[in-house]
View 1 (cartoon, one colour):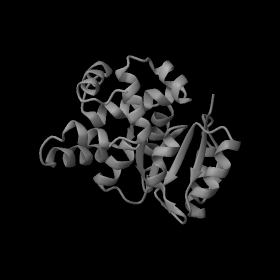
View 2 (tube, rainbow, N blue to C red):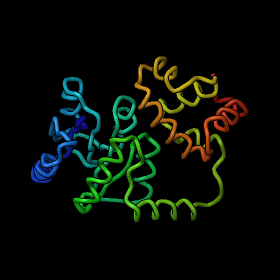
View 3 (cartoon, rainbow, N blue to C red):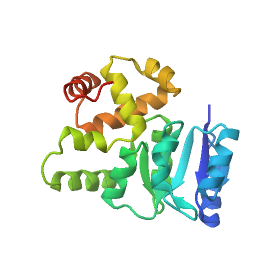
Length: 212
């Protein structure tokens, strides 16, 4: 089954070129090409979108500020000409599945798109190393409160439900999300909270009062 993709980028040439390149891939189906956030919000409810390719520089707002809302209902892969580690970390914390530079080689772009479609983190190797290095150089370990505050409101809700011992399916039913979306949220939450599994996350959340 093909992955249904929406491209949101305000440069028609780039958007059209990307759509044309993806059209040659039988497992990747571009269902909409969009140039603004307003148009994206209008179109998304009318199409089947498995993956949104989202530019961060749009004429009616910053794409990175829209990530948390969009990631609550679909998988978001951020596109940008910029790749500052702080920007990458921020959009990933807000729920993006990954981050791709616009000058990425076509074969690498296709690899990352397919990773994202499978629900796996999609960062090129050099970008992942740069982000890891920036984290290593950050002064001291952040407190639980700081890490929890870095989560989106939706991710904080997921933490509270994990602390209650809910499964991904139960969390999805409660928050009206697909089980896959909940899984993506949990994966990113574990990364932000710096724990290795949901049991440790639940213990930490209860200990610090993040459960309901």
